[in-house]
Amino acid sequence: MIDTETGLVLERDEPDVSDFVTENGGTLEADAGEPGVYWLTLRPREQPDERYYVRVAWSVYPGAPPSVKFAIAVGGAVNVTASWPIVPGYRPGNLDICAPFTAEGFATHPEWRTNSERWPTNGNPFLWVAQTLQNDLDNRYGGRSG
Amino acid sequence: MSSAEKTESAKPKPKPIEVVVTFPIGQGGPFQQDEDPAVTVGVVLAAAMEHFKVQAQPGSSYYLTHDGSRAEDSSSVGAIAGKAHAVKFTLVKELIQG
Image (cartoon, rainbow over all chains, first blue to last red; front, top):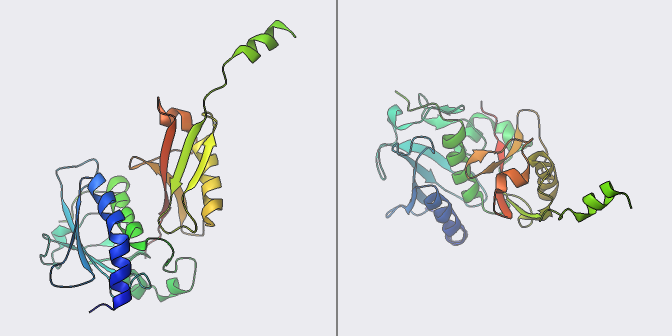
């Protein structure tokens, strides 16, 4: 369950995220039953027929990074390695992204909380997460995980 | 005035390119500046990083993207803008991973 402030700030930042994802051929959907959870459908620029479904779950926004998982479909299971793209730092075997824009990354590297990789709370961090995911698919993509 | 100087002064001055750089987690609004078409992406990158108050750190770096593709530092903004007189970049932080 998210607090009121988290819900309000997400509501403020969500339109820019939706615009960005749509411009890149994807979609953004809020989870119908779980406030703070969003489903992004993204595609790599070079492989527009591929679709990746990303569950982005905010517990506190903008104060903490979200859990980011790839899923078999919007609203689908998040424990299938073949749902994941091959990108440096993305770990399908662990079902996580080891980078300083996810809750999983900060759990693996607590030192990021206090160094230059600390979680940003300026501006629109939700848009930054979406742009980072899209940029990784566009410029660092190595195919679909097996 | 020599003939060479006359030729030089007769050349129309290139129209500036309106450059905008966005960074969702940057401080302040977007970086906006009119630039000579010959100015390189690397120059814009440095100015944008100063505007957003970010610096490269060990294990991480910054670059600009245009239409989803990484823009090379040596490219000129005029070449990227083409016939347009405006160009929009996104500042990207290349993240380290564990």
